[in-house]
Amino acid sequence: MNTSRTTWVTRALWLTLPLTLGDCMAAALSGQPELAVWVGGVTLWFLWGAGLLCSLIQTPVALTALRIGAPLPILLGLAAVAIASPTLPSPLGWAGLATATLLVVLVFTAELGDGFVNGSSYGDERRMALRPSAAVLFGAVELVWLLTV
Image (cartoon, rainbow, N blue to C red; front, side, top):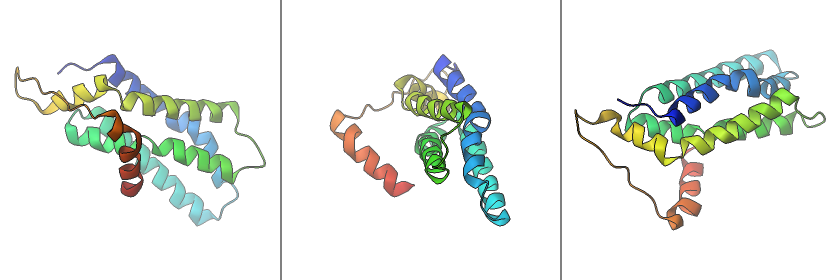
């Protein structure tokens, strides 16, 4: 199984999320009750671990889970910035938001998708991923994602 550079960069970016975007999350959770901090921390670590696991397993199911979960760091990061609104994020927080944005762009590339689609192929078999039309990409996909998450 050949793993593309895009896949390796995606894995590396996902690994850095707790170090970068975690700063925004910590700022948002800092003034909350102890139970909320604990539940929030466990949930964030679970989501991070699930995303990392999906990036490591190259199968179509993992690709689906990764593409559903990849936009979550951006939304969680923006929500964390809004919660801690009197103060702007630190440079590390801004780097985390940029990392999360780049991660979403990479997860939705065809190169990464082809590697994951071929992950469950047999021997010399080559599987081809379907390419959605522009009408589906801009509108329908976002609506389905919002309903899923």
